[in-house]
Image (cartoon, rainbow, N blue to C red; front, side, top):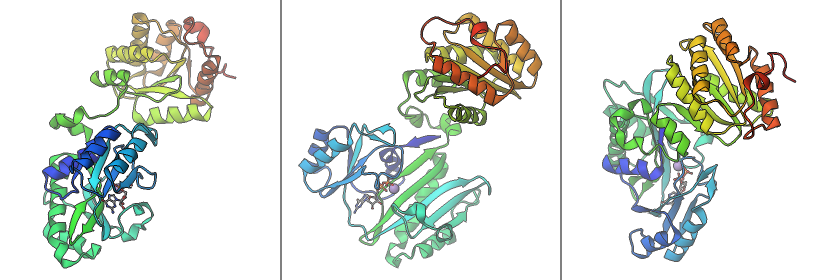
Length: 394
Ligand code: GDP
Ligand code: MN
């Protein structure tokens, strides 16, 4: 999933003809002040942090200004700050429009219905999370037919629009549908869609592109955002790799088992720092590559948790042994390998001096104990010493 910042989403909106406030992006307080002083952004104006998290309005990341100087100082106050863990590098400056009403509209994929779903609410804006479900109009869309006129009229009726604004809504909904299809979006959301002087204007945008369709949209690929250098390197090799700050490395196969592993480690008091999802790979070379990447993150201990389904345990074990041969790990390893060809996998690892747990909790406790010992980055502990026999966890 590729989440686009508000201004990127609005570039798409513009391309498809959805009305927007006039605005520009700035990366410094001076640039913000100048944009306003030169009249490129009319006053009064709105200054909005370009971060991927929502709730900016409530969190102080949307501000208003009456003068160029105020716009500059407010932009300066937001830029460089962290909002929900994300550094603000850009602000969007826009004219502040007089809002009569705020609506919510979105198109997303309803996985239970297996259909695109149009959602609309007359009570849009910052309180959308508290709007009761029955107050949100939901219209499943037949993808072969598209969003048709009676459905668009249904939305108009639910929003209680003044009739003069109906053509504006109709055009916006059609554009929303075209964006959803043409850009391979998994979400296109406008909240608020504001009524301003009888017409609708998109004051915010939330666009998520389906990453399985990125081969059709190379323009979004490079926007995957602030990857760390190591994450970018992994990304190029097609390996899902994420750095999150702790010092336990996790190698697992599949999103579910990876998340469960992180949870169990946290439960045991550990701090997972980097994780790598092998997915369903059956290729020892890819496993070796993943292992080399992990080495570069310098974790204190690495936990390998594999369920052998499509990726057979012996394949994974061979890959790990091969990787250890190519780059002897400078950290202790703890393994838990279960499932398809488990015995063979355990045997291969044992021959290479790596013990393996069967209980996830026990393995996690052992990992956390090794993390506490903090062996890194000193001497590489030989695997046989680093990994006590299963059940030896304290
Ligand atoms: P979010 O909280 O991250 O979703 O950020 P939004 O872009 O939705 O902005 C939050 C709120 O700021 C909106 O619901 C509006 O009430 C307000 N806002 C944003 N742009 C404008 C504007 O041009 N004029 C006015 N009056 N309010 C605005
Ligand atoms: Mn919003």
